[in-house]
Structure formats: structure tokens, C-alpha cells
Image 1 (tube, helix red, strand yellow):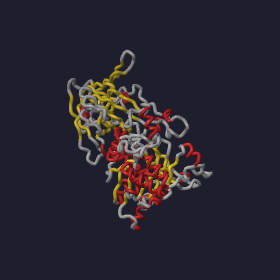
Image 2 (cartoon, rainbow, N blue to C red; image 1 turned 45 degrees about the horizontal axis):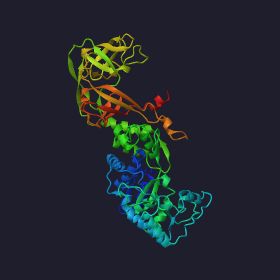
Image 3 (cartoon, one colour; image 1 turned 90 degrees about the vertical axis):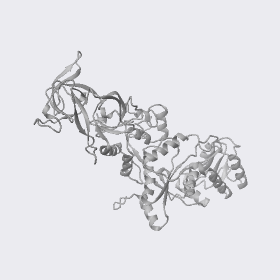
Image 4 (cartoon, rainbow, N blue to C red; image 1 turned 60 degrees about the vertical axis):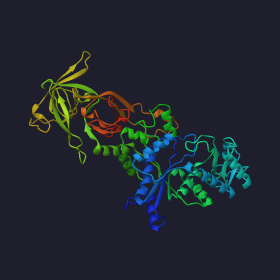
Length: 554
């Protein structure tokens, strides 16, 4: 990082290129493979690629790396487009590696004609064996010296479907003693008789990632091809292919992944979670897929803020989940309106309040927002619901909520005193009898009484019911894949608690899907996709404070 300017090393490279006049505009691309849903790791790449061209001028392409028809589906394509748009970015061109299959085939033929590629009949096991080791040179394939004409004929016949899967590959002819193992005659094409989600059954040979990626960048004249660190060894092959094909010299630059605690980002493992029903789907709110985080109530602003805060670096490190949760809280605190909801109800009866009577009290919608939207009206009545945890029959030291003889303020309403707790035949507390101070109404308090505690409530006569889902971290350890064991053994059994009937204030009845709220004293919540007019469902996004470490250490 350059402290003076606050720019990262990739921005330093771009600023130098622009200063030198090397490029007139910056062109980047976001190249996901449509074989799964995007996750928080992809969000960093999206913010980086699109952010660079927003900052320095130019544009970003969305290019789907659809060179493996077995694992790719249109469903994933559509979800990726939705996620990128939701994060707040627009691509100039929607492109696919499959758009270039004809061109890539011709590029391969060009390498063959230059004597730089050959058709190999070796099996994948034989190829791996002949490659040698990092400390021992590999051996040439017995098919390496086929003539140009023979290779052209065989590659054309591969394309025409004459051979079975795995019987032949096209390999670059580089150096079987090269110190970079990836440069030891890498495979460029393989045979795969599989239906492609866009090209159908036109092709039965498909380019490998290393052959499709750099050449697609070149075709699109991408100036800065941003990859993660695992592609550092691939850069040499990236450059070799562009040089030998004599095409536009796109360049690859690598940055470090930012791994997030208590999560996994392996698509294979995420798919396993889905297929084995450990979660309800790719958009389960416990998943750190972008669709899962959206459904849980995360905002695009908070995710972009998180990506900015973790920055761009050359060395991988682990980022604490608490930082992402902090970013979410900080944004929701500004935009989420406050509402009162009782999750674990206890009946409270104000014995000196007239039966059948109710009145209007007013409460702020969001005192933290620049424009809070003023106040809302809430009905107050004789019988209320409060949280069970707000009463303690034998109060602990420094207990400022309800207890026999204790006084608290009901938020936005009156001060009350607990006179009696009513128990059933088994000794369970089923109700509290309290009395209120008529002169203590919020905003008009002339009682002169001061209380240290304030609790929330809902009028029993006016409350609505809703299902509330309390989500927490999916894994109970910081790094679920740190050891050789099964990552599924670290799934947090308390990652979801469902409250089938919570009491909500009446103003929430018409809440729309995706609408966000702060349930006073409980956390931030969002209306789930499962919600209907007859059955509201709320998901907890995050608690009001970071309580994870405290709970974990119990």
C-alpha cells in the first residue's frame, strides 16, 4: 500500500501505465466459471475488477469461462449475473469463452502449423508419469514428433468426433525439462462428448482453462487480467501462448485471496453442503454465497465496504468474520427502521390500566439515520407481551430490568412496577401483574421517577404473529478445512434456531420481502423470500453486538 495515496499495488501499476501512455483506457474482466454460485471471495474480485475501471476509466467485461460442459448450467449463469448487478456493478459486454470456440480452434491449428503443438494418444496417467517431478526432468511423449500434417489431420478428426473421450489430447510442445511443471507440454484440448449449455452438441473437444483464458483476454484486448495467487505459475504459459500466437499482449497480475474465518469457499464443498442437505440450498442464509448473504439481509454497500477494508495485497491471510459482520451492522444501523418484536413471550398485565382501553404512543423509526423518517404510532394497552429474559424473580446484582417490586420503563410508553408474578401449578411463571405510573408517559413525563432499565414490548391485543429464523455462523471453528478431517464435522449445530410464533408490532404486517429492520434489543432482521401475506418470515442478519467469541468461550 502507498500510504500517501491509499492505493494498492495494482492501482500503482495502472497509474504508472497511464502515466506512460501505455493504454488509452483500462479494460478488465470478471471471468467466473458457471459451475456454482458466487461467494464472498468472488465479491472481492468483482469489486476489484469493476472498481479499477470505474476509478481509472474504461470498462469491465463479464465473461463466463464455460469450457467444461459437464459441470456448467444456465442456472448458474443467471445467478452470477444477478449477483454482480446486486453488488452494484454493470458490465459492458456479456461474453462467453464458448463465443470463441471457433477462434480458439484456429489458434490451436496455428500452433500445430508452427510445430508448437501435437496430438498425444497417451492416457492422463501416462502423461502425468512422463512429466517428471519438480526436481527431475520429464520425458518426451512417444507421439511428440508427429508431423505437422499428421497433427493437423488428427486434431481435425478429434473435432469431428472420431475418437472417444480420453483417447487423445492436444498438447503444447514446450520443454519437458522446464523448471515450471506447467510448461512441460501442457494439455490444451481434451475430448469430451458432452452437451454444452450454449453450443449444444456442436463441439466434442474443449479447450483447457490455460488455453482459453489468456486467448479470450487477448481477443477482448483486456489490459489487466487480474487473477488470484494460485495462477502465478500459470502466467508463464499465459505469456508463452500469446507470444507464439502473435496476438494482443494482455497481461496477467495476481493478488492474494482473503480467506474468511468460519467459512468455506470451495465450490466443491459448498455443493456438497447443498447436495447432502446440510443447508437448504445455494441461497441458504448461512452460506457465504452472495445469494445467501443477500437473503440473510446483507447489503451490497456493506459487502463493498468489507472488500475495501480488507484491501488488495500480495500475501494471503485470514480475515475475521467479525469484520464483515461489523460492516453489515454499521450500514444497517443507518438504514434499518426500528421495530419492537417479542421472541420469547411472557404476558404482562397492567392491573391499574382500564380494561378494553388502548392508546397511541410514538416511537422513532431510526434515530441514527440522517433522515430518520420521524416517528410511528404504536398501540398501548392493558395486556402486553414482553421477553421472558427481561424478568428475574430473584434478581442478580446490577439487574436493571423487571423483578418483584422493581421499576422499568416500557420503551416509548410508561414506567411500570412489578407487583406480582403469577405461576401455574408446576411453578412456572405465566404472567406478571404490574402497575403503571400515569404521569410517566414518554415525552410527557412529569412523574419525577428515574429508572435505569428500559424494555421493549408488544400490545397483546394488537400484535401480529411471525416466524423468526435466528441464523448464526455455519461452522463452529475458525478454519473448517484446516486439518485432514471431515469439514462437515465442524458444522455448527446451533447455526439455525426457528421461532415459529413471535409477536410483532402491527406496523410490520405489511413488510415486503427483502425489507430490513432493527428489532429493538434483538438484532437486525430481513423479510425472507418464504414470507407471504398470511405468514411472515424474518431472518436474523446479525446481532446488535458481536457476541460470538463470548458464546464460543462458554
